[in-house]
Length: 334
Length: 276
Image (cartoon, rainbow over all chains, first blue to last red; front, top):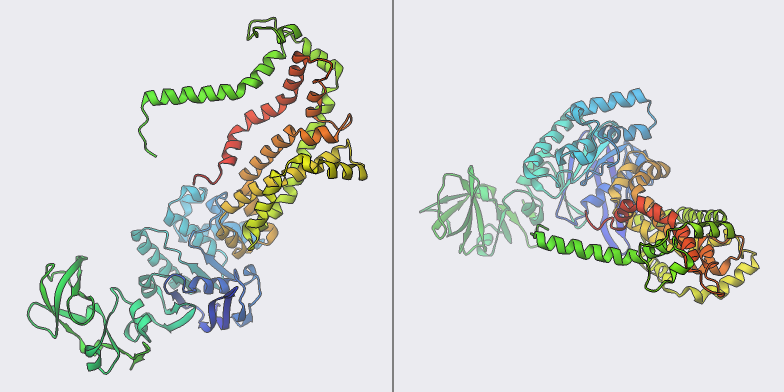
């Protein structure tokens, strides 16, 4: 069980309000991702839930029980840190067993659970090594192992993949997702990477300056961003924003169109411009188009086979059914 | 870092390093050599380097004239206890400064260090009066207290530097893993800080061992450590260089040996954190 409810939770550091009062409910078994640019308060929010920081106001309930003011060890949560935070003087076995030792479980039960976790995480061969002798990915697995042996009510991940190289990150992302499917335990995952958020989450919480900008499933956020910030933050490459007369045609202050929703052609299309930089990914190509008279740059995602050169004239046709409309204050117009 | 160093350059560096090393060690070497000379040879002109009649006479005279073991024991007690007491007081202080710093932490550290810049003689009078008042003159307890207080800023400062190197996330991880404050200190912090604590202990034993100002001013016969033992041989009736050298050699030998065996630890400790 791991239902976590935040009620009017706020955090101040001195005079700085890092998190203004907010409400949030995380359902049992849900994979929730806190995402936002650096300094948006997502890590602080996680640390408040963990109990590593005290709330300035409001209350946190875990499984219906009041957890505000309860020390981290007593909250029944496990955390995986960005730096892995392994104990460098202990072997992998002792690292994973540490929470069990603290809980004063008997030795046999400790060994059984450590072996089990090691098997799940492919660490069996490394149990007698020290963290210093492991690769980044292995260290991260040890950190996860140390979290799962406790059988916590919920897992908290604080940017766990940001110290790994790109290839490993994709692999670990899948492993964590699979772990979630298997354990069906609540997971709260903090990242600044919207791709991680989109691919892993059941529910995404987009944060900016401590405020919750939007809560929803990845596709809800993609399809119906509540405001300009969420629209720009979710989706890669970033949504194009156009103001002025083009927006006025749609009775909006700003319109947004995603790069994948614009078709390109050599001869016909309602918009035109000059091709700047092209980024070839093989499967897709991103064209950055200038001199459109709409915005400084319009980014288009085209098929990898489409060939335009730097300086070529290009025509664009946006899909009108997926144009996002926003008013003066940046809020979505339905 | 990959700078090409030519063989010639390397040879010059080695030579310079040795020259500096010998220069620094020379007074000690000379003291040791002199301790094996007769008094006449000790003041011979031109000085004798290695070719003289080696004798152990000075050592036996020194041994007869004063109770070396008592001074040695006093030194061991004073250096050891003042360091241990200092560590016991400094560890919690350094911990709180490193892991729960306040706005004033840096100021406090600097202020503590600034007390080291005060000339010791400036506080001799008040401390002397206090010692009389509390009947601490010529007691080991008195010296342990004074030397502990004198070295405390260095101990706190060193431990603070080591503790700073321990990532806070590891302590937080321990807290999440269910460790109480006691568990956290016992199983996570102390083992990780052990090299740092060890070199702090070593350096402070050496500092306390060599301390002469307070030990000479606050002791007479009973509690005098080896510094007092050496001083007793520089008498105004005429200098006995050979005997003074023998006494000095006997006084510095234990700490020299300790330093020799722990130099790796010392260097590591003093440069800790400089290179990741």
